[in-house]
Length: 254
Image (cartoon, rainbow, N blue to C red; front, side, top):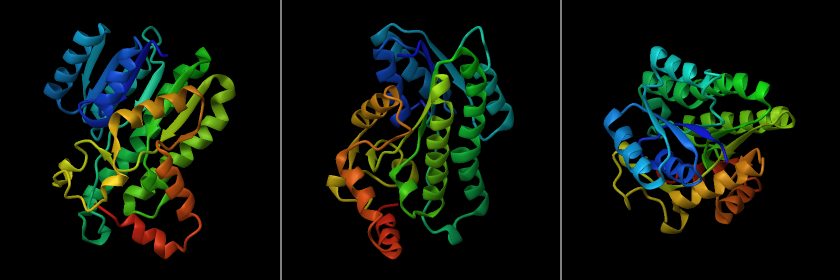
């Protein structure tokens, strides 16, 4: 396992779960998110339970100056980052035409430009060392037409698959972890209480399982990880049905 991992979107949800599970292996952490108080709370719990070093790096990744701080941390050769987890993100309502276009642009930047820039910075340090891992938290939505969220995650999956094929032989793997609906605070931030998302109970995953399977697949050098057999089956099914049916399926939930 890596000696030091940098995780974006680490103050809650999958990011905090990545922090806990990586710390359990003995990895030191650099935690990145906008909310300093929430980061400090996660860091304190991880330090107390696992005894690892945890660095807190508050940053709004949509602000160039803040993003530059994270890139600078990734670029420090004397304090190498051996695993980058690109997890930061947010969701929007599915009606693109009704959404504020500036919200859509910010959404695009955070889900595409930010992980691209951070991956570029990480590769610049990992490739000369001949080792490293990048995990990009994508989504099953990347395989299914689902407004701009699906489009952004589709880009991330394609990029991760290519980067893994291109750089794995040089010791650096890239894995797109693609969960389905997962119980975190992601939907709550969109104003949806648990149980009110319009998604059947059987489609929900547990964050602990998603992260454990994603880390396992990344350790095995897979370019794409889809946690849970049910979602792997659904992805296979959507490839067989007409596009109109896949689009309707993608409209489930918000």
